Length: 160
Image (cartoon, rainbow, N blue to C red; front, side, top):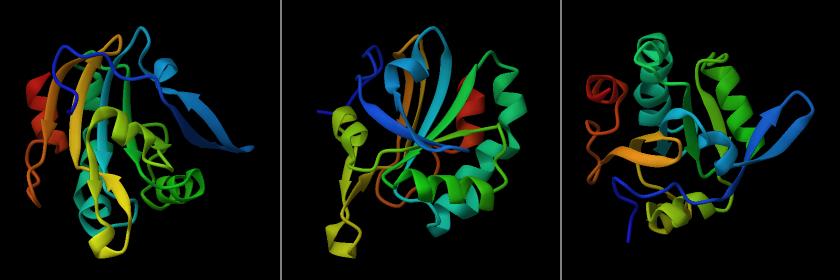
């Protein structure tokens, strides 16, 4: 069963690329005491993720944060090295924190994993976006199929 509004974000260790290399970071640390917009994507460097999803949040970061959001986070089932390279490629800067969910532990804990083994890319994350206040989900938009509406930056901005 997938996470829903009113649920607490599960405690899972993710990875963040730093200047010193990959660093573990707990979801508790990411969400504790903050209002966070988190969006999940199936994969870094994939067409929709690189062409629209991440760029939308980068472009609207200031407007989203002006609505009281402390942090915007992108998570993908990739390793920290890939997420670090993607952040540089997309010129993310400090607008969005990119986190790696290398084994899909976070996606599975949310109940939002996607079996993409038929496409040769294994277990991934569904495309979604959520808003959490102090670790409790206050809004959740999960895409159905190949749609891209519920999780895009403009939609999340409108919900804040």
